[in-house]
Image (cartoon, one colour):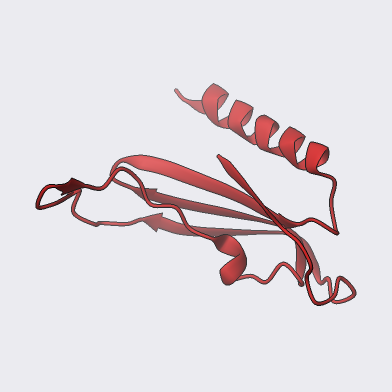
Length: 99
């Protein structure tokens, strides 16, 4: 899981949501493009849900048989240590939920 930290947003006064989650689902892209092999697909969830409107945006996408998660937040809205704890807890839940 990756953490994206963005700074210098226009305003934090327009927050409407605490957390937003977006899932592109399982994308069916070929893994091979000639000599190039697709390793994974990573999205930037804050592009679809502006961080000026949410404290935290979690994006998920599966491609090439791999789940990629990105946690994105505005630097002015949250502490980096808290975001790392959220990321660590999310990864722990995912690892422990495998049957």
